[in-house]
Image (tube, rainbow, N blue to C red):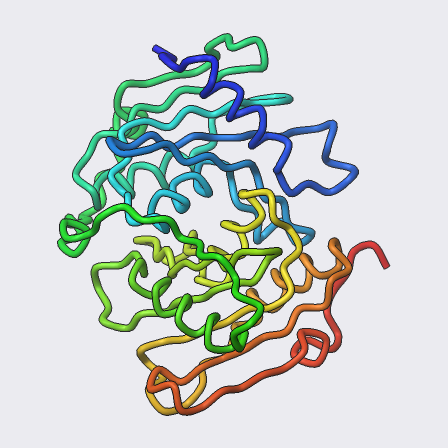
Length: 291
């Protein structure tokens, strides 16, 4: 059932190396996934948080990469596992919810480093026949066309202007069908600006905020040198939105690992107001398990 070629397998191995792991976890578990759509393939590794509450599975991350590129109708997820594997009901539920929104059955397969299939199913919904959420199709994705969620950074132009424009592009992919409010974020990492919107889950517990999505996009593209973040929301027309506590912790964990100071830029949607602060001032007493 695997049905992937050598190039795709090499892509999974590469994504495995991009996983965000703590030193003590590197020998325990790692995973990488590919989300396959009619248009393209989207790879991601696993993102491990020091708090564990902010962990992002590779399946969830690959799905979000597809959404951020306006290509959300996933046909198949293949996951490469390094370490022990147990089917995760949280991952299965997440994929079922996604398939309900896109009205597309998702095939799911797990393989090891020897390309041996260790788990598979033709339709992710078959794994939880008792779970039948009343999730309707997302109408707005019918009008989406795939496009990259990164643009080149121009050092000759103001960074704030570029972050704001990119964050607005990110807000277009706010993945929800039950709210008119849109959030979008962007990050400068190296020579590119990455952007994304909120991935709002049906149960609201597995949601990823736009700040996390844009950071994840950069990291899984191999660019971990995140130095600036932009945030915008249609909810804040003439005032500036603020990052929630979880996003501040998420950003702080990135800064602690890369040792690169992060500056936060928040924009009113009418583009008339800007709030800027250093992440150290934004979360002055952050939690660090290594201290």
